[in-house]
Length: 65
Image (cartoon, rainbow, N blue to C red; front, side, top):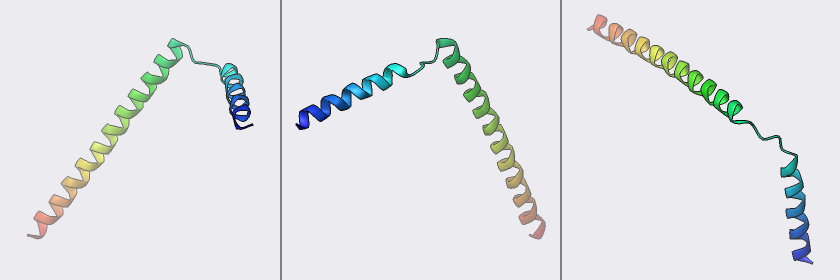
């Protein structure tokens, strides 16, 4: 009985996998490029904010001393 449920589950899973529309190589390349560019922009923005806040805090600390 338990083996029959496992076989039904795997058969159903296989049917669902066959319905999936897999991406083409071009789609994967384009999406990867978008992620890399967006990550680069996020890194630059974060680094800019970090640098700016570090400079501001150092200026404030040095101005009081």
